[in-house]
Structures are given as C-alpha cells and as structure tokens.
Length: 400
Ligand code: PLP
Image (cartoon, rainbow, N blue to C red):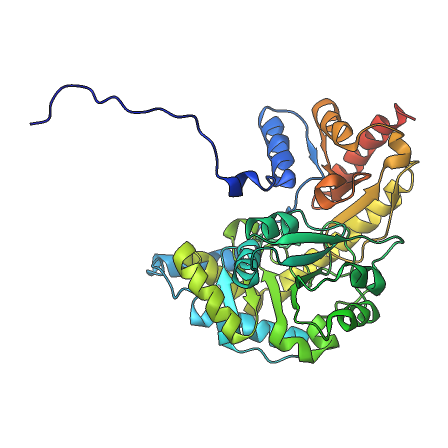
C-alpha cells in the first residue's frame, strides 16, 4: 500500500532550450493573433496582416474529404503521403511546369512550412550558410537557425537583387540559395533573365536551390511565373521545389504542402518525417488531391479577385503621401516603404499604435528584413481595403 507521506519534489524555474531561445517567434502570426483577439472583443478591425486568403475552401474540396472520411479514410497513411496524392501533385506540376515529375519525387507534409523545415534539416550541417534574398519571408532565417545553419541575407542596393549582389555573399560554406517567386512579402516575380543570372552565379558550386513556389499560381500578367528548372533543367539533381494547397486553393487550415525533389532527397526527408509526424493528416491529403486535380478553375477565380484588389490597393495608396511601393506582380501582398511618411518614428511602434488606436493591422517590415517598410496583405474585401487605407491615411496625416 502506498504511504500517505507526501513526496517533496524539486521545483525549478522554466527555461527553454538554447535552440528555442536562438530564434524568434513568427512576428506575423503574433500580430495577426492580437488583431483576432481585438476583433473577438468586438472592435472593428481591418486586417491587412493576414497571410491567408479570405475565401472559403471551395465546397467540392471539402465535400470530397468529408465523404471519404465518413467511408473510413481516417487512418494513418504512408509517411510521404497517400500514393494517389503524390501522383496527383506530380501530375499537376508536370502539366504546369512542362517537366515530368514522378510520384517518388514528391513528399506531402503538414504545410509547405514543414516541407521547408524538413529540407533544411536534411541538407544543412552546423555552420552551413543559406543565402536568402531580402525582403524575405519571416520563417526562412529562423528555420535556418533552428537547424544549425547561418542565414546570409542578400539585399538589393537598387530596386531588385542583382546577380553580383548574390556573388558577393557566396562563400565556401554556402550550401543553399533560397528563391521565393512570387515573393512574400514583396510580390516580386523574378524574370527568366534574373533567374538565369542568379543561377549562373552558383552553377559551378555544390549549392542547393530551395525554390519556394508557394504562390506560383498567383501571378498577374504581363508578369509570368518561371521555374528555376525551366531556366536550367540541369539543376534538377539539386533543387527542392516547395508547394502548398494553402494559398492557391484557400486551404490554409488544412495544413497540406509538399516538396518536389530528387528521389534520394525525398527519401531522406521522408525518413525525418517518419519520426516527426508519421504522415500528414488524412482528410487534408484527400482534399488536396481533389484541389490539385480539379481545383484549377477555383484557383483562377481567386487569382482574378486578388488582381482586382491589388489594383485597388495601388490606386488608393498613390493618394497617401510619403509612402512608396513597387507594383507587386504576384502573391497578395504590398510591401510599402513608409519611412518618409513616418519621419523619425519607429515603424514597429507605429504599427502597434495603428492596431490599438485605429484597428488597422499591418506587419512591420523588420520581420522581413526591412525596418522602413510595412507589409499589407490584400486578402480582404474591397470595402475593408478602402476603409483600412482611409484609417492608415488619417493616422499618417496626423504625423505629417
Ligand atoms: N512559403 C511562403 C513564402 C509563405 O508565405 C508561406 C505561408 O505564409 C509558406 C511557405 C507556408 O505555407 P503553408 O505552411 O501554409 O503551406
């Protein structure tokens, strides 16, 4: 029988591991969470912070996953994803890129984010350097740190990154070049000539390309999406393409993304995934199969809606003095330099007060490597866009 004497246990203060202390929490998610909390309190919040489409997942996609779940598709799947999903992704990209992909060159993961992490964890040794073009998606440098690598940021002196600026940052330790086109946060779509010039810099060195093509379906003519593999098919053995159901098919909450890469790399990433998550969730895999096979029309409707909103944003932003932005050719973000309008004021402080005082959420550019800018997502209705930009203009006018 157990003794009734209480056991005294040592109590010690919580301290997270060195690894967790070594990187930053996602600033975009933090601010978005604050915006949601204020909205839940009943405040009128205009959220330019969202990194996700405001549309619902198209009904046929939801229905397919629901029907199959009801029929018993609720078990673990193969680690790399259901063969039928991997085949469907390979088919979509074979058609869209004009390059033949096989099922064993596809890994389905719990979001593109996880696929990127698995890639970095699989190829990076401690101290390896990863070239990241600025402004960059918040998670790239932090994920590189998490796997023991060193992010090396390449900034443009002019409006766009030049090949010479990449060359200046090359070192014998460079292991990966990350290209994200269209880019989050700037919406930049790299042209064929730009990609060619970047690839020439690294062609003769043992460097991987991580091509984050998450937004490849959201491109606005005359810009045209070009894959690094179309520019240099020879890169096939050292390129990992990242894709996601999140943005193109309005499926952020389903958490399903993928990597397309040489089969040896996919096998190694699968080994890692087997110990981390076993496999992505089953109903989202079924939903994604439906999306990539039959969701192109819905994706095209979303793209057209975003295009209309981009043009509305650009036209309205023109009326705000002291704010400068490049016309984004893709994704659903505008990255605007606000330095002139703010004078010496801090962008982070301004963003916080904009949210607290006027109910407008924007993401400070520092999260993307540029302390003078803010990122405005246009994943919100035209009415909300007009109201939000009106409030932003008022807040800035008070400072001018
Ligand atoms: N890559 C970029 C550039 C992104 O902006 C995002 C999401 O914001 C992702 C990857 C990951 O998306 P998900 O994990 O939802 O597939």
